[in-house]
Amino acid sequence: MKKKAIVFIMALGILFSFLTGCSKEVPIGEVERFSLNYNKGNMSGSRVSYLFENNEGEYTVSIKPYGEDEENVYTFKTDEDFADALEDILRKSEVGKWNGFDKVNKKVLDGNGFSLNIVFTDSSRIEASGYMKYPDGYGSFREAVDGLFGEFLQDN
Image (cartoon, rainbow, N blue to C red; front, side):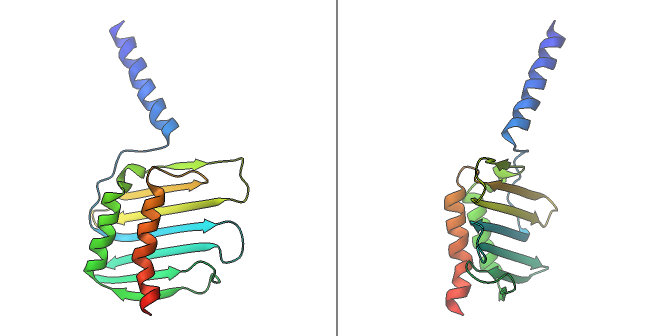
């Protein structure tokens, strides 16, 4: 009887993990590659794309701003301070809890969505995406990322 109860509890745990759409929390470490893409509707130029890459201490940022054609990507060199600020945003937003988030509102055909991919220098990764469904804290996270990356466009 005990064995059946344990198996039943384990099955409920697995089912809950599957239904919530989230995997094990990933600790935030040193970012090797960060990619956030999101769209605001389905009009031309509605996609925003941010890419940060840390290639053995060579830091670059690429931005495809809202309202511009897909080929208009701006690339800038940056520094460790930017990497630290990005990692701080990831920690404060508890993005490590979002790993495996993949939810869709199938009732909306022309809404907004996002895709987030982060690779850390220890090879761990976070992958999350949604269409008219977002993890807790996504709005403030995106606002902070918009502000951080947006400084490049204002300065240049």
